[in-house]
Amino acid sequence: AYHAILLDIDNGPDAVMFSANSSLYSSPGLTRLRRALAPRGVLAIWSADRSARFEKRLEAAGFSWRAAEISARGAVNDVTHTIYFASAV
Image (cartoon, rainbow, N blue to C red; front, side):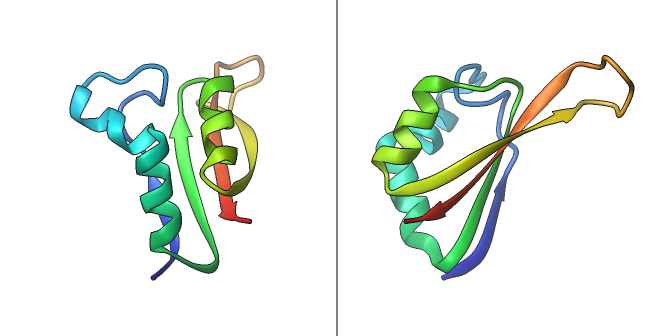
């Protein structure tokens, strides 16, 4: 089991560029990722934007989560990206 899994795949769950990667954001994919985590392990997923649909899938897969809005380049009024931090409930 892993204490942390960090993913930066495509542009996030709503902007998948390669269809093969969409399974990582699916309910079965999230369930597999949760099972791969050690107790109190953390899954972190980068996304260009927040996704309400993805957030619901995280919950359905048994995760508690929070989203951090991060400045893309560290400048004031910069574009923000999202990092999801999820752990098994």
